[in-house]
Structures are given as C-alpha cells and as structure tokens.
Length: 161
Image 1: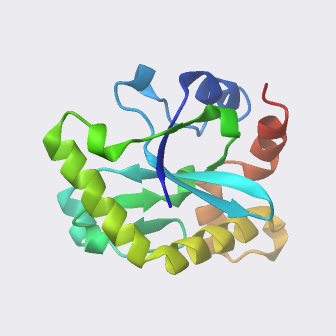
Image 2: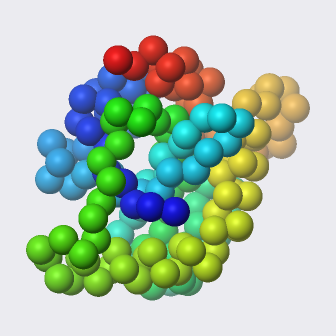
C-alpha cells in the first residue's frame, strides 16, 4: 500500500455530485490516504490525524484506528472512488517536516501489518452502501447516511477527464 494525496481539481469534480466530500483546503490540509481496489475500481480512503479521542473510540464499519489510534485513523465514511490521474503519490523520505514524516512512516508500518482487515472494512462498507435501504438495519442505515454516495461517485469518477 502506498500513500497518496488527491488533486484539488478532482475533489472539486466530486463535490459537484456529493456534498459530503470534505474540502482539500487548497492543499493546505490535503487528503492523505491509501488506495484500495474493489471490483476493478480504485478507492481512496483518507486518514485523520491522531487525536486523543481516537484512543477511546472503537473501530466500526466506517472507521478504523491506526495502531490503536496512536497514529490516527482511516475515515472510511469519506472513502471515494478515484481516477489514477487525480492521485499524487507521497514520497515519505522527501517530506521536509520531520514530525509529519515520522507520523507517515509510523502509519505506513501499522497499515502494512493491518492491510487484510483494512481491505475487509472497505469491501464490507462498499457492499453496505450499495445495499437497498429497505434491507438495512437502523444502525446500518445510519452508517450509510454518513458515508459518501459511492454509486453516484463511481459514475463521476469514470467520467473524470
């Protein structure tokens, strides 16, 4: 697994289809995350930086802690399909901010050892989001409602130039 940022142009493109897409903050606070492939579609799952609350939060259907929350978490609710042309691979050794570089190195190590669980969370969440609301429990419906609209975003990603 490699780490990536997403271009502002692509985020703007997707925001036209789903208002749940968080801003890229003109690359001041860019998306940083991993790319997973599900059914021949690439998905970008963004990280959230470490916060004290992550230590006490539980992993869930749309949230997974990185090393128990010590290195942040993966916000699967903000997972989006991504076009290759929108990906900017992060070169960790060339990061100038040494504290951020160390965080990314730690995240990378933790994610590599947890990659099968991470893939499973992404696949299960995508399946849940594509399930008709009538077949979901009240809890699963709440999870789906806080997630990005993957059926619409997959079409938008395919049409991205």
